[in-house]
Amino acid sequence: MSTIANQLPIAEVKARVCKAIEENMPRLMEIAERIMAAPELGYKEQKTSAVVQEVFKELQIPFTTGHALTGVKGRLKGKDSKYTVAMIGELDAILCPKHPRADELTGAAHCCGHNVQIANLIAVALGLQAPGVMDNLNGDVVLFAVPAEEYVEIDYRNKLREEGKIRYLGGKQELIYEGAFDDIDMAMQMHVNPATTPTGEMGLGSTSNGFIGKLIDYHGKAAHAAGAPHEGINALQACMMGIMGVNAIRDTFKEADYFRFHPIINSGGDLVNVVPDYVSMESYVRAATVDAMVDGNFKVNRALKAGADALGATCEIHDLPGYLPMRNDAVMNRFLKENSIPLFGEDNVFQGEHITASTDMGDVSHLIPVIHPWVGCIKGVLHGADYEIVNHDVAFTKTAQALAMTIVDLLYGEAKGADEVKAGYKAVFTKEEYLQFMDRIAEGK
Image (cartoon, rainbow, N blue to C red; front, side, top):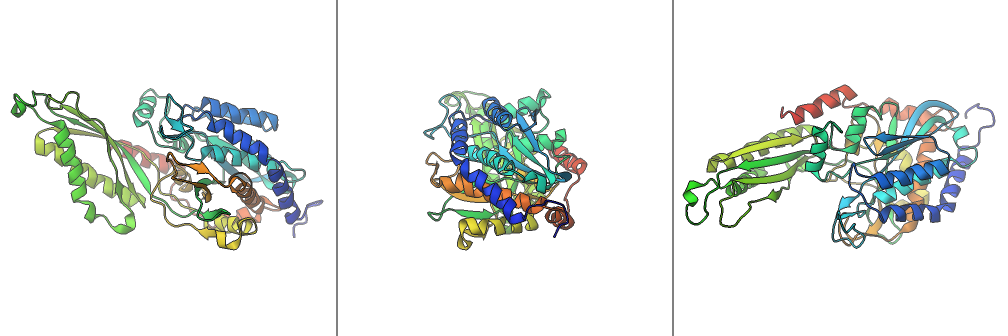
């Protein structure tokens, strides 16, 4: 028991947090709807950033802006600042033109659930602002609305990089580079997932794939496709041979590495009666570990270039730093589980399995302790046209309550919870080592 004078019991602190979040559910749903109605793609989230800034002003939360172009970073001060815990929400939408709420011009839609994340960010802020709560926490809480988690519009982002506006294509990567995580000791965020029960569930975060982004250009020689095809070099055929080459080596990848290669062709020729002399393609190379990503990427590049060699074409590959595999902290997950069971029921709180998708929260997890739970509260397909929130209580109240109470467990009293997390965590990279690794990928090394 702490000897701090006038300290509230931890159960009372948590009760105040949960009550404030529950009372504000209508407001949280309204914020989520405002963001849903104006979806924006990564590094373009001006309207969404403005919503967050407006709410922070209303709540009198001091904040800074311009982090990775559009990010907003607020801070709640505890009675002391032994540690800083970040609650993260993502500003951007995904491309899904067929979703009924998609932007007619851009095709952007919040069928990724990021508007729910921002609502949870605000919910945690409201809970921690309940009377007496921050006075009982030995640490600060950063409320961080961050850009560009969805790795889309690669050509556009690469142009921003070439113009010197960003260094990395992913939002959290850019924030790490800028130093926005330098003052943060541990972090958390949530993500929505299809519900398997009517009451919803809390899936504790596990591991995920990481990936390397790729822009691939095949160059051939134009000729009349019917009259003189022998005078041409078919870049499209070279591209197809490259893809088949990757398919031919798929059984060389270990199943435990969860290898994925899923290309799309952005430009495959201009006229049907002209041998295509230029084809552009993009893809990811995904795997469960950093070593498997690097090894798999080398093999993929070799196969893609072999396709060009077979036709006498040339293949230019531009590797771009993608996201690192996800690592969830076991101690933070334990606190989240303990706080989730009373809200969701023991049968609806479980350890999640490995996810073959990727998130730039994985990059953060290689530097500081992180949790990233997946909360069952939607129906349909994540990133799909049939995406829909079906359990609003889980999406906007229970999840935020569980996360906010986990922050209390970390920082309450003498912050012994955070002490335990830090004692058991070992970073994979220092910030400098991380940046060097990402730059080596971009340099093709």
